Length: 194
Image (cartoon, rainbow, N blue to C red; front, side):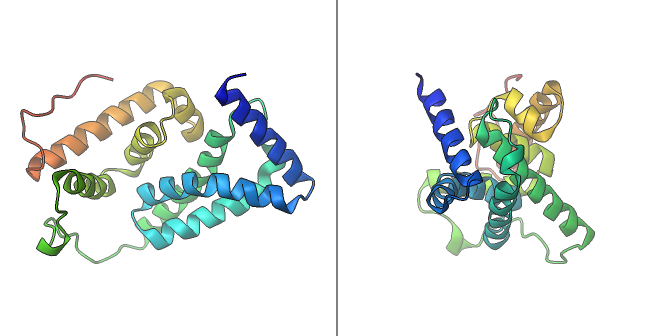
């Protein structure tokens, strides 16, 4: 049995126990899921408190909907679809209530990281918050959660070709932003077609 199928069987067992009210199984499922959900929420929302709130809501919704999960499919994409939908709802609410704080395009001297890897990670995080939510979501699921195009298409309920386009556009916009901020040299990075 492969590691992936062992993990899937383990999740199925946990879910079955949760559906029968086993508190220890519920706690274990939360512990296995909360980091994955929080990271997605944080990348999509860019705000720690909002990410914590949405991650908590996602876990509550997960338990309410466990009986709906199709055990023939992987658990993580199903769970991340719930988180993703909650994040999109919050982003739509934010868009209806504009925040009048201006985005400062320059980082204060005190927030600059000491080494270039930290600086690049910080710049990528800032750039991710500026690109459109649909591109950011696809990019994060692909690069940070290492999901396949097909899994992302299922989570976001979009055609496979759309997902590939979104990820390519997200990469292109991130590179362009990093080059404009002179974090990357213009000749350093050439985008390849997806």
